[in-house]
Length: 263
Ligand code: GLY
Image (cartoon, rainbow, N blue to C red; front, top):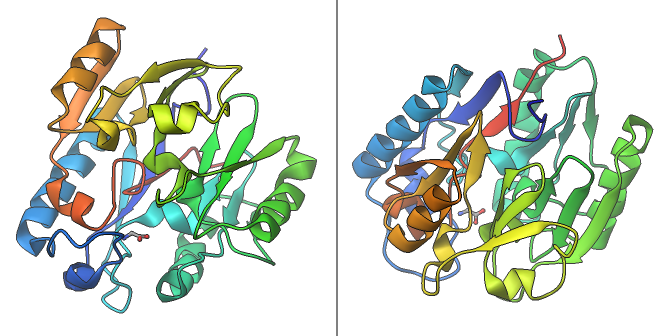
């Protein structure tokens, strides 16, 4: 049976804003090239569509440099959507801007009311929701998420994102119901003890933010050892150029909201 955690009928993306050159980043490796970013984004969207998903492509919001990273604005589950409360002040307004779109797809749209939490810190598996505290996500935000999803039957497990790692999912991605691709530094914290873990190759930690979408593992191009390992494990891998998003700490999961509407 296809899992609700890896199979979706729809995705939402947002075209990168020209202001992405001012996007937040932990280390300054230079500004992204807007035209190249756009080309990469178009490839990403095309790959989502190839799986049969309907992709809603939203317009850029120039006032929000990081708006292309839509995953941070909301969490979509079978029962409804939850609007996040980003911990980065410059990104706060992005979440509210996503609400009207999600209201078209879900009968029940809820809000994180206290604390801060970003979608990049949330990994949903078939049995639980894992959330890593980070510079962007705090315990109050995790508690608020727990309250939002309690009557939908979800268990929320609070974890810690390793120091100097932007988001929990910077270092991991769900490959199937029971398998997580992870860096060693994250898995070594013990957070995935009940799962099968496949590790990124040494020096290829930046490939951990992979996403399984309708049977295809989307991963950033340029990490051949990890890609070969995943193929040898039987996964269908699609490598997508991501050099420009990587300059502003963005990856495969950050670029979309993946959902199956209930309206
Ligand atoms: N540049 C993506 C973020 O920091 O949220």
